[in-house]
Length: 299
Image 1 (cartoon, helix red, strand yellow):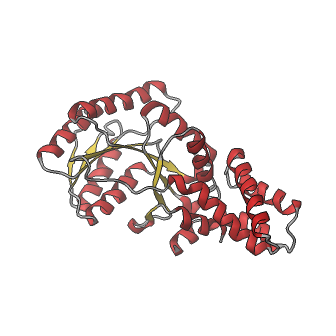
Image 2 (spheres, helix red, strand yellow):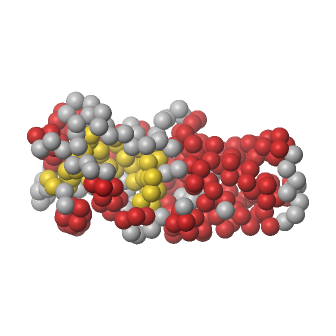
Image 3 (cartoon, one colour):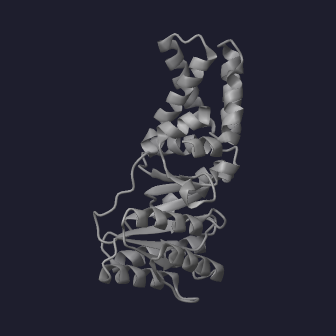
């Protein structure tokens, strides 16, 4: 909780400053609206939160701005709650996880941290270096595999879909619990590159019926509303099951999680937010808790 609170400090500062006054009036709501928009919560989520907050204030007959701040935390937690779901493993063997995202979002590093998380949970993990376009990505994943003492399927300059296929087949034959496929960074506006991701997804399905069981999108918390645009585009192309939001410790735009949560509810898309990253160390990839996030955001 302390790491999360410290990581979200840049985002929370603008919101908590609203509650330094002594009156609950329209000025407070107006300032809060501006603060939420500045935190990149977006208009639909901001309007939803303000409406919910007004209802909670009226129901509780709150007269103290500090109490209103607590009610805002409750409203944020309720909005984010649909995103909170544990990563399910073991229903299929192996569980195949396809990881996607734009360049620079921290995708390969996230895979390394996720692998550590799974290894500590006594899962046998196999990595697939399917980002064959960028040599550095392959080398980076090899380092993570070595660090976590897990196996990796990799080939220099090979076809990404073929590498993914080979990894799933190898995972099945070696009795692995989880296979994680790294993929090349894609901008959702690059149609021909998004087609490559669709091909990888189809090929994984040929290697194992029903796979991939998870399609995770890694988002950079600094990208704000652009993160929501990425969720929409990657979901339309691949059918996302989960998200990982990284680099929240360096951003004032952490409110984008509210925007994503509101969109998921409105579009009836049951996408989970499995993990948030609030720092560089292995321990800074944390399972997402709506309650803890809301408390850290409004503390």
